[in-house]
Image (cartoon, helix red, strand yellow):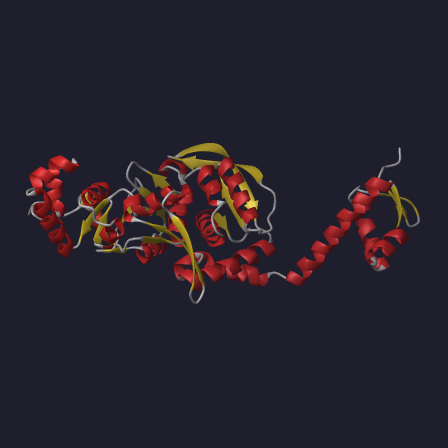
Length: 402
């Protein structure tokens, strides 16, 4: 994480962010016209000609003329590392140089309107990680892009445009089935935001759809982890069952660690076999499921609401926000609290049974200071579940009689 700093600032709320400088990510940048004039004049005054300077610094003459806007056929974009090599030779402070950058593009031509107006150094908030984390569920990775597919991409486009300012609205594409019926929308996530995440986590882009991505994120501040889980639940979560379901067991194991790091109560990872279809063919697949318990879902929603206050509505659960809120409000938490206490009592009594082999109802009532009806109900439950045996009135054993 060399050169990348984590900042916590106190404004109206606590904002947590990483700071990335322009020289820390690859891409193409264009500087202000006033700065290009300054560079050109500095080159001429120190080296007499662009051609001579080109040979000294090892940067192509056309690239130098382009960044200095001396070539009408050149759009003025230059690779980031070349800009800083050039300005380093001219002994211009790097932090001053990055302030002169007006536009960034993932490619030399800024294809598909992907030219962004960016202020460096770049602030990387939890929303940037949220955006990239959506690739885990409904995303694909190609050589130069991160692509997200869903029935509607309006939320992720809105999130992208809240983070960076594109010159034009970021485009979506529509995918159709063979019968020309609508299948899904696709949206390409700004690649340089992915590069920022890769740089901070020290991973490559092919590791996003793997357990490594999530495990690296376990070391991030809480808001980052909350937003990564939000991306997973939006794409792979079932509100009715409070579950996350995926085919990749390694990723699901990592998601369990993510949930545990946030201290949300959950069930165990389970698996079921399902018949699925792919390219009109049927196949059997094992699906792995995690269920967030009522208290875990409530705590998660509270943290999401805190993120909304800090970073805006894009930090919400999007189209699932209302459904999860309703689910949380439907639970009887007093009942859950009492049930959890009863479960704890049950485990304690079982441990005593295992140790002493024989215990009495009276001893347990006195030990836990609990009313007789409640303790009798507990022992009836243990007998029914074959965890205890009634050997006399008010006397119980852990071992079954032979």
